[in-house]
Image 1: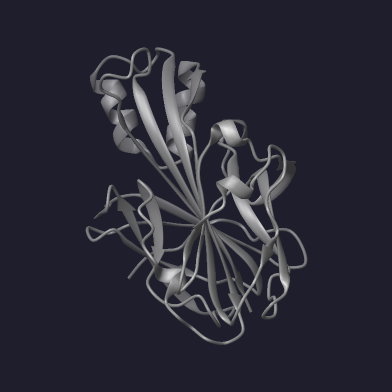
Image 2 (image 1 turned 180 degrees about the vertical axis):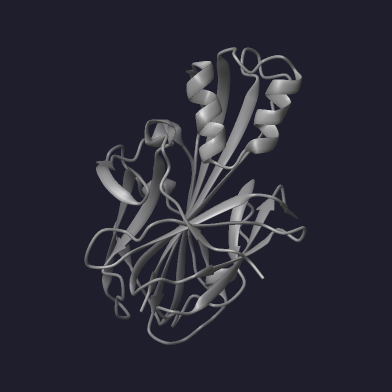
Length: 262
């Protein structure tokens, strides 16, 4: 049994922004054209649409049952490609951004660790006598987005694509409906990641629902409730001590998966 909790953080200023991919339309027909956009926001509230930056994009893939297509050659700075869809089935987009770095004051970093459920890192800072020292962090983002064409479920939504930190649904996302439960596994370097905090938001016609929060079990598994019809975003973050990283003491990995529920 997994406990689901709706949270409101007292440290909203220390919460990190997310990047995610969205499709339009959410339920396209076969042979139609699909637009893809990259968004920046917090708690699944869009704040700004982001231009794609080739220099900061390591990989952009379009995965179907029959193909795994590299979209980077079709991507210009500032513009994501429009996709011409083929036969019914699943379409999965996988985006990896380049590593970035940030320095945070001690109090801000500690609150951020609390908000993201990175309590083991917080405890390690305390043990190492670093709790009130500034923190230098390097981070990498991994994004997935899935859209279904028609009713043919073909396993694409549950595909493991090899991201270093990856969210993998346990069931087909095709036909997923409001009120249903969804099991997901968190993988880090291909292995299940225990004690990872996972948050899920659903955005229907109005504002996103409050975050559902649960932690993965020893098998890297968590179970979430689909609150309402609309766009769903599931997110998680993992952090570890960074060895051989120059002036960065910590490295974090961010994973989001966005998709539609009926």
